[in-house]
Length: 423
Image (cartoon, rainbow, N blue to C red; front, side):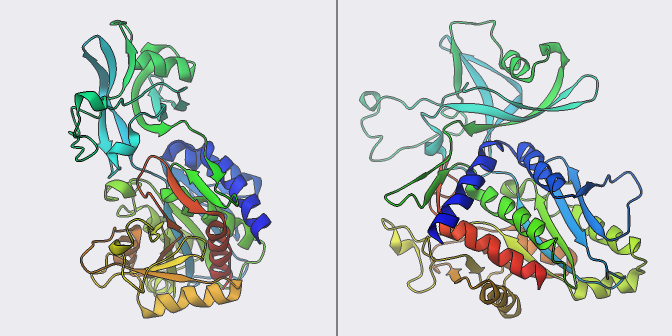
């Protein structure tokens, strides 16, 4: 399985390289879906209700689904959830700063990045710009920005206690001695438009070092944005593979934006997007309100986001028996405070799919003295009333500019996800 896993990882890393922002990730995902025969739907237009393969894009969110031939008004859904965004530095509306002869990009912190990991890296800006004619264009600059560390000579205590001010210390440089040089001019050049054409933008930093396999056996994946492209792309792969063998459910892969900042947006998991799409699918199949509720009651959701692998230098941060190891398979995430949506029934749902795929599964339950993260799982379960399990692959360096995963886990996760969709 090692050669297969490495080949899968190499393909995945190519997809990550083409996805420096949530908007790019969605565009890359659409290319995969269209190549597999999925058709675009638009929120403003009447939908096709016949069986088939469909997707809808809104900003940095992408929902794709397969309606089987035997679908009816009470057919349940099997949903794979993920998110497309990652922590980083977001360019402010007025993006130019001047200090001590340097030209800097004015940024704000997006999500909860490990700030120190963004220092001394060659960064680009990536995302979308809106032009004066109303059109939207994806943009990705060449290596442009750098957040420089202060020399150890000027801060001899830095290795003992590094204190970072989010405003003063995180503004990257991009030029020196060119007071008339603006960040907007750099964006215009990268986009191939005139500077005055750019009306607004949504842009985030991205480490320009390419993702790659590393380690003695080549099984480790070093890459930015594993949180959460390591769920997004395997979910799409699982849906595309399962589309050729549809079962007794409508299969869905739902990827949201803005998970890293709480999901409270029109394209986030706390917004109406997924619920509206599921309802419109059922109404197109002739469902009334009661039939729609019956469908939801019989549905399930897998919320996929990366998990905290045990760290060899900080093993005391994990529970002694409920920890995942990299290379040992996908992880079921559970939390008594319901920061994950897993319960006994949904845990069994994932374990059945793992057995069907002949893949081992692990668990992550946090140490009582160490808080865990939160995912779209509880949000989706609460909004829709659909039984949900939280899962993911184990990684190290979560929320770093460059994270670490294992090839075997990535392939195994996609295999279990496919088994879950088919049922």
